[in-house]
Image 1 (cartoon, rainbow, N blue to C red):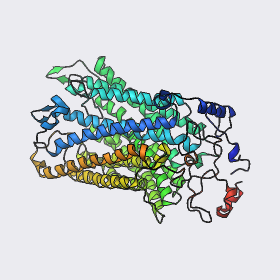
Image 2 (spheres, rainbow, N blue to C red):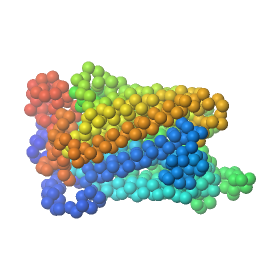
Image 3 (cartoon, helix red, strand yellow):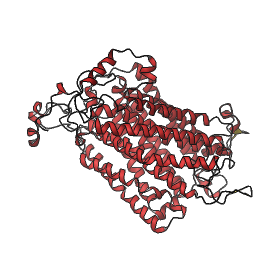
Image 4 (cartoon, rainbow, N blue to C red):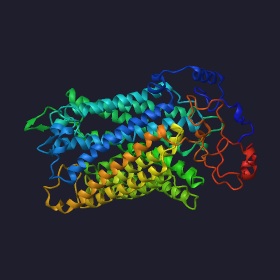
Amino acid sequence: MAANLPTQSNVQGGIGATEPGIAHDEHLHHDDHHEHHELSFLEKYVFSTDHKVIAKQFLITGIFWAILGGTLSSLFRLQLGWPEATFEWLSPFLGKWIEAGKLNPEFYLALVTMHGTIMVFFVLTAGLSGTFSNFLIPLQIGARDMASGFMNMLSYWFFFISSVVMFISLFIETGPAAAGWTIYPPLSALPQAIPGSGMGQTLWLVSMALFIVSQLLGGVNYITTVINLRTRGMSMSKLPLTIWAFFLTAILGLLSFPVLFSAALLLIFDRSFGTSFFLSDIYIAGQALPNVGGSPVLFQHLFWFLGHPEVYIVIMPAMGMVSEILATNARKPIFGYRAMIGSLLGISLLSFIVWAHHMFVTGMNPFLGSVFMFLTLIIAVPSAVKTFNWLATLWRGNIRFTTAMLFSIGFVSLFISGGLTGIILGNAALDIQMHNTYFVVAHFHLVMGSSAFFGLWAGVYHWFPKMFGRMMDEKLGYVHFWLTFIGVYLVFLPMHYVGIAGFPRRYYAWTGFDMFSQFADLNKFISLAAILAFFAQFIFIFNFFYSIFRGRRASQNPWNSTTLEWTTPIEPGHGNWPGAIPAVYRWPYDYSKPGAAEDFIPQNVPFSQTQSSNLPYEREME
């Protein structure tokens, strides 16, 4: 590092610095002033501009939605596992949606729609990225807060209002949206088509518009913070992989979410103002509608232009956190740091040009289909690079099997399993056969849904001490991991099998097909495993909330990690560091370095203090 780097004591980078790490005394005085100003409860915990409080708001709201989304999936798995059974005991909860003890078929479609919407957007996008991007970006780059605390607060409250609107839609008399989480027209464009296309669908669209505003506000903030507010010495090549993942995820969202916003806006026009963007030659009950000239396939293009980057918006933050946790608990430097950054960049680029592999059955030109097939298979290369590097990081490591480490290893396992089936679905000839079967459901639940959840859990267990100053119970964490890991495989491996046999997704009951009767017992097994895996999550929920108040108090750096967030006080206040922000001198993965006094060297330790472990080129960096 350059010889003119400042020492730790005189670095005072803060919010509003025009370049990384520039000292601004006025910001320090501003922060000190706030330390002495007594904030009201509303200012401190509700309408807070502190990135750490906002992260907790995203997390707890996400936990609420995850419980609700899991409950909906348990309801429709009951129907799929026991399609001939009666569920009269659900009548007090579901009211008219239980008719003569049977689940209403239209409500079944609503359950599937709302489960997908909640899990993909409200839990795995807002709950995962909103939590950890907010919490870790300022702490790991050495910033007092986000670039705009007010905009950060707005991003949460737009998400909260979006959540309220979506929640209200569950109680509409005609039922919530029921056109699938992908809301393909014409079903979603015609309010008179089915009850679930009425007011519930309108509220769905309004909620998603508010949600997208939330994501755009957050994304602008994350990108600006990473570019402008890094502490002195924190070059892009010294960023932890978590920050690279959050940074690129924000770019993906900023470029792709506006396309979904436009699709939702045009769909509202078709529904309410008589336009024909997605409608043409439509008949309802034998009566021709006046719509001409539109194309429902156009909506699919707009939706999946967001929909495929969305897969990586969901999973890339988990990739970054897993990389950090694996290196920390293997007590080894991450293998192939630059290759990991390159693979993240490759995934980010390719994710924008593979969207039509979701549309092989729309009648697209076979040549165009072959182009998307080729690009889809190519995206497996950077994913394989990451997988190889994770396994190489684990190889011969001095592994500590913390709960976070177990979930990180589980993430790698699920990512490999789901990724292999993605290669099958990337082939157009095979995908046409598998399309809309349970093979597709099993694939994306493994590679995106379950993997991202494992990354989320790993992140919560790992950074909980920094969030709340206490430790989660590791024994309960082990029980949570094993029940969940086994449960996920018991649910989704059999689904691949029934999908290959042609078992269709989104069907209320399969009993009308003699060919599927042989899978009755297997469907019961899948449903039972899914419900048990869902109830296992209440172990985590108990552990989480109990530990906030009664958990063992954490030390400042309980995992002996090297990154900057562990240099703050155990429970950092608004501003993160009470004095000067530490400077950065080295990359974030100096673990088990030969000659070092300990098996980790934090990023803020100058090379002049580690002469015995410096490599030849490091001896000349100060």
